[in-house]
Length: 231
Length: 309
Image 1 (cartoon, rainbow over the protein chains, first blue to last red):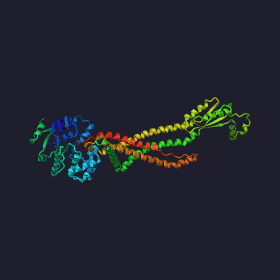
Image 2 (image 1 turned 120 degrees about the horizontal axis):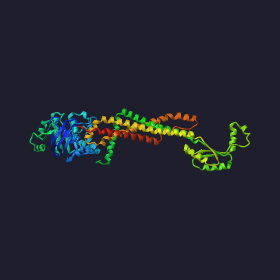
Image 3 (image 1 turned 180 degrees about the horizontal axis):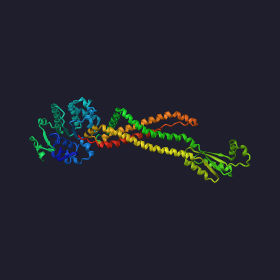
Image 4 (image 1 turned 45 degrees about the vertical axis):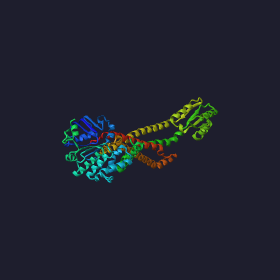
């Protein structure tokens, strides 16, 4: 699903976000990106969503080399990726329904279909009935779940999340991670960047550790991750 | 376009309603912008009406111009009448009156005050004369001149008198005003584009976050731009309607005093408001300028907003 081949990313300010990183994530897999802040987790996610382009190396998403993707194909590409942000990036003056519906609206989905799918997505995150609420009327955990509903409403094959539990207390964090696990169970590839190592260990899923922009050997005995990291 | 034409139309309706709603939520600033646009559109329309009304008000005078065709004194009346007959068949001529030398002398004797002195003359020194009234559509300087040449070409004609100079001056003034109208419309049209472009620019900056999120979830540039284009069109439409209102009320307020003035000059002239065609051009102009201003601004400023998560 995702292959990084000797990817480096240097930002305009000279900071090296990623250096010579190679990694591979299989379709239907759920993977954690861990490491200290500034280790390159966010850079990996940005490169996956084409919010940034690599300075060197190639990024292949869904069998497609993204280096040659023209910017006019970018919208269609992004519609196949659900993104969850730490600050959830909801539109504060729009009700929950509009926020969740946005990916469907930009894709030109018929209104009837939008209504059905938004309700389904809100149901999945346990917020059915809150369609008319404004984001600021919700708790932080609820806002994050609205963000997740928005990310999955168009049923993308790939879901990426940047510190989705960063602002949540431990109970809510576990709940959100379980939610991601449920999406993985129905076939979605899930990539979660987090610094919450305990939570990751608890779930027992593959972990890609980043340090100073480099992919480290994995701490547990996952053979696939080890192979990828040394490739 | 995965979902076909109906959904494409539905998305346009959505974008239109969203833009309308946004403008309605800020009635004060929407009104201010519309007023600026309305003033810029009302000025050329007002000038157009001025030129039109001036042409209509003076049209009577221009058509009242006569050509006086003086025959040589040895031309008999029968010949003059025969020539008058053939002139009547020519297009561009409304009426031809033959004034015989005798009739002219009688008239001169009655009105000039030289009656007694004229009795001294042994023979009538006056020639036969044709009074030619041009048709109403032949009042321009050029067609008057063509008429003059037509009569002057006859060997029996001594002199063709025509006071076309003021007609030419008047037409030149109208032509100048019309040219000014075009220049004013061009300058003010550019002003409308600038006003709408700037309004849309501010709107885009205000909604930067929303635009970024929309792009992150896969909104194309044209999707993001669409509501701004509709906003521009609505500004242009609102400004045009307001301009129509301004000009129509100005015409309504001027109608009575203009009629009074016209009566004082013995004219039945009544002030003419904008025609349906002029209103249509005004509204189309407003909409097109609004769209263009929004398009230029949105295309330029939206490109610079790329999501940086």
